[in-house]
Image: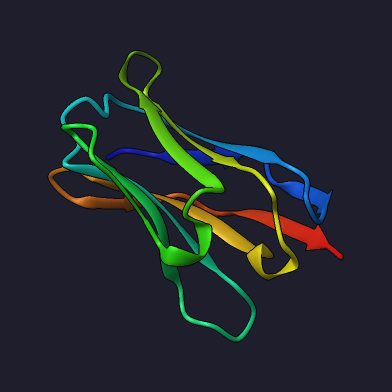
Length: 114
């Protein structure tokens, strides 16, 4: 069983930045993929960014050029650097790890005020 704990969410003004962290309770070195999802009120959960074991990254179109996903295998942590935040980025952000099974964190709230 792997536990994922997100941190770094909060309230920020539009144009600001936040860095989310997701700490895993076990090694993520063998993870096929690590990702950040988000879910806004009344909307479906959507993939925001993903990084594979080989380091390939993908982003949803709305965050390209603003968000950066990275992983530190030594610290068992995945990050999401979010710059130039917009009110439409407001959501609960979830960490996801694809290991032998799939794991989710509990989520961290990000609120961007206009």
